Length: 246
Length: 278
Image 1 (spheres, rainbow over the protein chains, first blue to last red):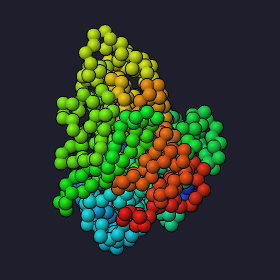
Image 2 (spheres, rainbow over the protein chains, first blue to last red):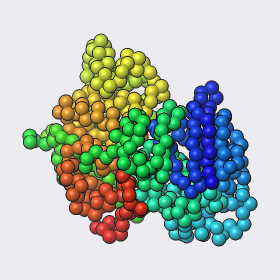
Image 3 (cartoon, rainbow over the protein chains, first blue to last red):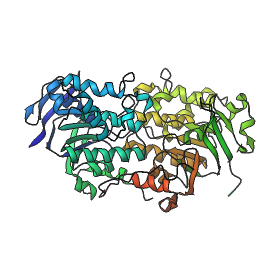
Image 4 (cartoon, rainbow over the protein chains, first blue to last red):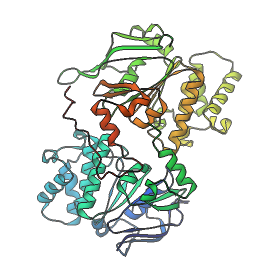
């Protein structure tokens, strides 16, 4: 089944059109990456799916259902988002417990206590973190909370906006491993935005390269690993990401 | 090699805390000639504090002490504020991480670069304008006359960082300290900015201290690498020898990075318990 079907998506912010005819398809259980530099429109595509950029034309279908233009609680049940900066995306005056409670209340789910205990364990956080505030956590721990908050309503699709770019290398490795394990265990579908090609190679099976609001190439991650990208701009990105001979 | 430009011996930076003073830099030593030195480490390793203490930019209540902290024969710890201001910028300068927060939002780019020059030297106005223009060209800004008249919010991040570099290099310092100069930039722009730094540093025969968390980047742009962890230097080697690094922390950092041709199912995670107690 197709998890995400996007066809000819044009997103605008006011007068300015950001994306031009973006078309992607992601299979259920797949992991798809949108790569490109700042301003290429990759995050905007995620925002349109999440309902944070309501001005768009074209088709967005999630698990076969057309997506409305706004924020939608039913939709949030199937699709959740993890943001780039764990320092900015958690409410500073809410404990981890309160942060995790909110989506449960919105979705009207019961068994709050069991769910919170289970999800904390699943993202590798000890129970003693449950009543802490974000400022008492490290960046990696915060990102785990952000992932827990997204997963607690048991969505099938996760939108990841540069989930590790604010983290240290060793912490990044932990979060990438966590994301990989959760996807395997829960059969999740990922749509990830990043500009880091090695991360795509580790976590994703397909990718689309974006530039100036357009997709210039869609390829399998296998092609990326072997350095077989076709488009000139993709090759340029590849060349810049290739680790210089250490 | 001639006498080193900068000698650091047993440098310590201490901050008070409710449970007694904490050393964030625990006695590190190194020398810098007219070469490119990389300092690598993760958040909290003390790499930025090392850079800041050289310039006397550690604010109270932080305390800097060292057996020796000498730049070109000048004891940096004994200089007063006024004397430090003469060295800072003119002889040792620093490029910060994020151009968005480091540039003055209400001054044009040209004015800011000129200010960096005028602060240290009296020059006729025409010459100032000519040098600003030449500097903007040196950092590969295509239309220097137009860009000089723009405000920081009107330029991109990559351009902003190039303006910062122009500002720092226009007084022709002996040492440039670059603290994560590209971590706020895109991959495609990163290489450009580093190439510019590299070019200018080589041509002018300056010393460079490149502070970064990115091992590959440092290995590529530096001659020598110091790896720092919790305030200590755990590895000091030639950049070309980094892949043969001995310390478990350095090896861990190298292994934890995903590769472009990734085949591992799981990335190795640094086990902090085995050696961090030291």
